[in-house]
Amino acid sequence: MIRIDRISLRQLTVGLIGLLALFAILALALAAQYFRNAAFAAQRQSMTRVVAVASGEALRQLEAQLFTLGTEMQARPEFRKALLSLQQGTGKAVLQSALQDPFTHGFSSIRSTDLIKLRLFDPQLNPLLQSKSKVNLPADLPPALLHKAKNREGADRLKAISDLWATADGIYYSVLVPIGGFKLAGYLEVIADPTFNLRAVEKTIRMPLSLYANDGRLLYQSARDENSSAAEMLSLEHVMLSSNGEPAMRVVCLNDITQLNEDLRRTTILAVISFVLLVGLATMLVLFILNRFVFDPVRAMQQEMARCAQGDLTVTIKRLMLHEFSVLADAFNAMAADLAAKIGQLDQLSRIDSLTGLANRHEFDKCLELEWRRSLRSHEPLSLLMLDIDHFKLYNDHYGHVGGDACLRILAGVLRGVVHRSSDLAARYGGEEFVVLLPNTSPISAGALGERVLSELQALNLPHAASPLERITVSIGVKSCCTDPSCCPSDLIEAADAALYQAKRAGRNRVVVADEMCSEGKCANCPGRVRPQS
Image (cartoon, rainbow, N blue to C red):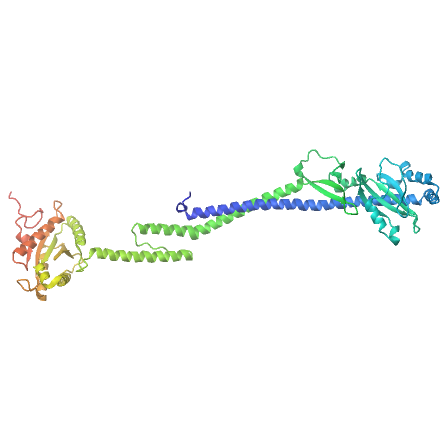
């Protein structure tokens, strides 16, 4: 199963564009196949129409030839005399000989016609005589031709009619010619095989030709080009109908579509190449636009967000992008700024004692470590004041914890008032203990600062009923040290704490400088260290 979170926007977009291009190419192939079939259908329809016109023209020529023969026959004097004798009851043999004469001596009008039979009918279309031939036909007129002839009235009876008809033995074309002029004496039916005349269609349309009876029998087939394949020939079929609308015969031609196939193939190739180039250019343009206005901004936002996640809260996403991304950029910038402000507040709260507003123990330890390393590099003294409110437990017991908290805040305010340098740090060390870290400060200056604290508290004269001095006082221990690699920050704290307790033992409300009271120190460079005699 594909995980969506592992797919990039670029990969998804390229994949979708590729899929659309594939569908477009498939649609093009289907369209090409559709147009190819449409072209073949149009070719078949148009060429079938040509075959139909050529076949109709061949039958019209056949009709004209048969009508000419019928007219010539009744114009002969011997035929008229024989017909008159037949009407009088004699001359049947003479008329039979006259009907047989075209087959015996021939006529110029039927040289291009395959004449089958001549038949004679009375004015009521009853059969009288017919010529002799190898083809046996029913004595009566073909049903369709008989129907057309019987339904005529007046002058229409004096017009020649024709029809194409079929029997189980073959296909025939008949022309019924009236005899006697305005005084109708009968009808002469001239019958020919249309297959002979329809062969001329092949020369007219210049295509191989096949003629089939309605039952599928092959009547005629022209020679075929053995080098032509079936794929390069388009079959055309025209059904020839009799006058009553029934199929009589089929004319089948083979149209050479080699050139059509070549044209379609060339057109398809050009269309595919053009389409692929167009799709390729469109894809490149779309990818360029997407890369410029989507992918690059998203990647830039991703990089800036990664920087923000790594802790760089100064990140700002530029707004030179689409509206939706600009909205996201504004939201992210606002979120980053708000996060930076909140982190700043949290950092401030993590460094400040919530009760007194001074630095807390954690901030003091961090600053002491920093100033210790700086003093190691500069060889400047580092001083520390440690303060403790005298009898603070008794103050709490007497005034309560709320009063005790107020006392702590007052001392914090005094320390803020006497500590002015930005490098100095006043902090709450724990409980009622406070510390003041003084970089680059001598013992004398540090002790003077402690005395100022005592003086400020004395000026305030805050009551402390449980204290022997009846006011709030503090004890202060001071330690100054020239840092040495053999020492550590905790040594400075221990020395200042020892000075603080010395001040308490000495009666409280005083400042004790460790250099003034120590007989020995841990640091090789600490003032007051008792060095061994050489």
